[in-house]
Image (cartoon, rainbow, N blue to C red; front, side, top):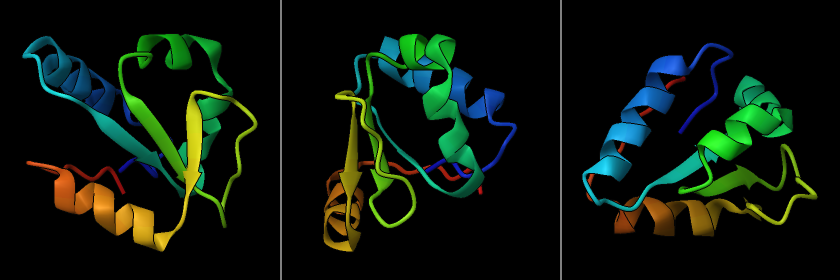
Length: 86
């Protein structure tokens, strides 16, 4: 979950997780949603499942899925580990 304006460490961490063959889901919220308008970031995270809360930011990009609370809980339940940059 990323909601901070400065999340470069989080992006490095998810790249490492992906390189280890693990699936990555990222939920952008609050100030973190501005990353979804940066082509370089979107390209860098193309391996990940990208999400936002539909109540905060409903992206028009196909690679970003707007979710509700129920879907958020499902993602957390299915995740082996979670990290937050809030």
